[in-house]
Length: 74
Image 1 (tube, rainbow, N blue to C red):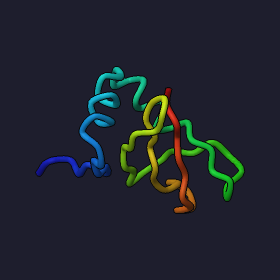
Image 2: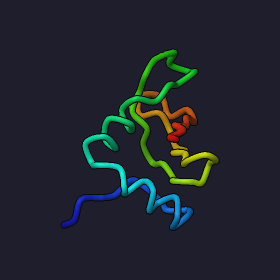
Image 3: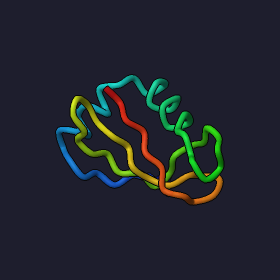
């Protein structure tokens, strides 16, 4: 069985920018998101990739507590 992907694509152009980032850096970005509820750096999960001038945004949930979090990438 294929590994489940915890990502929903909202924008093809945002996804293209996201996939242009090397996989190691994408993984680091996923694990470096601030959660106001935890007051800590956490991993984002169940995120969507969206356009966000001047780059893209990952919008999802904190892996620790489930609170909404976002990571903006220029």
